[in-house]
Length: 555
Image 1: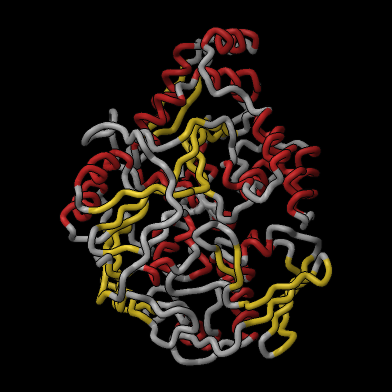
Image 2: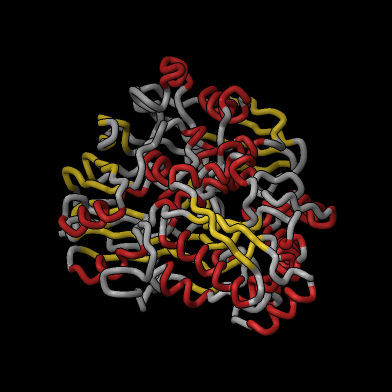
């Protein structure tokens, strides 16, 4: 379902794909959580038949006093070290900034560091922007960067992004506005993650003054276009414009994030104008919002794939033929129409095509041409089950009312199993407990599979493909192949994009052939924007880009 956002964004719906590595796992959860519980096809007018992706929304015409935005859950904290899920990052991205910045086009550009250089394979030097001020008025220095990144590495913090720093041996101040990161070995992923919450810089003085209350009360001691204002627990979080911001001033004087946990309540608030917009729109509300005239429903690149996560290879799923059979029996098209309200694309790939945007065409072709078929072949699937000696065997699939993408995918897997001689039983898990599947091995006991929507926190296929390395956080089934591990290490240690993605294409082929997760669909980012405002990006960049600064008056 949905990381990390579990980076978690590693993130699962991402529970956010992170808690230690939740970046990915966590994110997954988050995406799932947004969807409303539903036992049948989408309500309110059927599936969306035209979900073309847009790069952006029209630019704002001018400033606005305030706008409101819906989020599906209240963050337990806004401490950047545990910003592993959608609600936290949707808000925090406008308050706290990182060394590098993810753009709406899902590329990376300078952030608080005006320059990043790589003088040798194990050294990254970040030259900071001069004159950047924290919300308390103090000027940013190299000391703040060393302190901020150091918090991610402190085992006492249980930082969600700790895995990003696993190859870091030292973070040192090498000038008043220069920080040098020394790696144990070359790591192509580390510099990319410096555009995510892993690279956030906060005031050393401010964080230390807040102590254990940092992230829950008072300010966040950051540098973004907005600063934390009033936090009405259980109701809303307000951000106030920071007029001493180093970059382009925000167009809104205030951004108010309304906490609306019920999917119907979120949708109704958008329809009535009670809130001006939101991301992570419940799939069953797509058609209703699109036809309402109250605003515009947009779709943008989400770097997200919906999968069946195989968590137990000790039983029937330990035989790749059984995994292949389930994949061949799945009605992916039916799931996209019902579970994703038509706003998705059937896929046999664990990674999205957009994640390969930087790869040469020949490499992209290699990565996608050898994928398993996505069409149904029941007879072949039956034969595979029989060959594996698995006919009549029982499998347990977790399901939850957390969202129709979860519940309907579980039902689709059960239906596929019944057609090919497998007894797939559903185990219903409460929405609040579903995230435990990503963090607690005990919660996965007795479960063979569960729905997983995974989003990348960087635009690199290795973000997902590294999950199948021996001992990886999201490798719940305990898969281990020395040859695969070697390829992961090779890709991680290769900086030239063309060379790295050629290795990642081999990883993609291996993971696809083994069906370590069973891919089902690509899922775009959905965003609704009311008539009063415009300017919000449509892509998943909102997780780590100060998107709210661009939102202003539509007229």
